[in-house]
Image 1 (tube, rainbow, N blue to C red):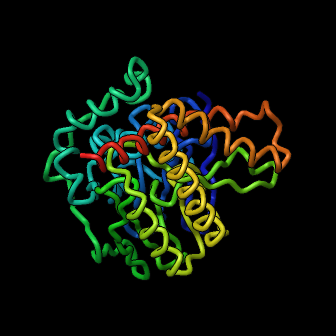
Image 2: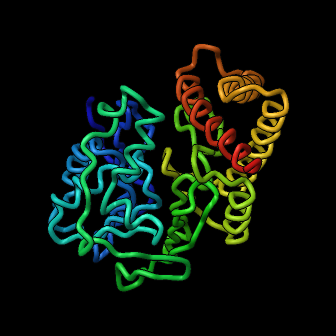
Amino acid sequence: MQGRLPIQITDRIHLIDGFDMGIPSRTGTYVIDEEELTIVETGPSPSIKHIRKGLQDLGHTLNEVKYIILTHIHLDHAGGAGVLIKLCPNAKVIVHPRGKRHLMDPVKLTGGARAIYGESFSEFFDPVEPIPEEKLIVKDEGDTLQIGPNCILQFLDTPGHARHHLGIYDPVSNGMFTGDTAGVRYDQLDPLGIDLFLPSTSPNHFDPTAMHESIDRMLNMNLDFIYFGHFGSTLKTTKALHQVSEWLDIFVEEGERVIAEGKGYDVLAERMFNRVKEHLKQLQVPDDHPVYILINLDMQISALGIIDYFQKLKQ
């Protein structure tokens, strides 16, 4: 997969495309160019070569990296952290307290992903390396990290997508690195001038109430930027958060109907996909647009999380 130049978002924040699953504009790594060079997200291990090249393109070396911040430990966001930390001798990895033990021993983490991705797991995620405890820093609600003379990052506990999820607030840009809590931005629709933001409800910690509360909290912050894990940033923060909230309710209602009918996640995934496709059809997005491949994949995984949520409610 050919690399691409890092995308400049502000004068101090760039985005490196990690080509997750070999797909451009799928998952990205943010570089915050401050006195203490800071990376947000690593993506999976196959993305590390793109991070190395991206840092080089920005005029940085791996030795300069001081902090690698993970919004959460799902492998598409953090699977490469164990590989990257070995290449960055002066860096520490920052993680939510609930995620620390899984980075030290990723067996349970990889087992869950193998169950979802099956035979494709190795191609998408290997190797997943453990991280030594001395390389880990835990941050939780209200904690801060000074990375420059005028920049103190602030950490928020933002559950909904996962219980081990951090939001990272950058006061300089008045922006939030939201991981998956505020959903997915479909960069592929930018050439058509269409903004699509959908919730990410993958298993096994999905909680719609917690997700709504995290989104409402972000709305109340009047952010200027949202930096999505998938993919890129937006200045239309209010629109994005409202749109994710609305689709969240639609998807959960579809899930309730499917559960009541005694049907499975595959039926739910199809219905969710069709709801989104009908919406995009009204916006004149052609049926053969490549964005539908990504949306279909996302609906498959998100449907698993919604069904898992309702099954747990019965227990």
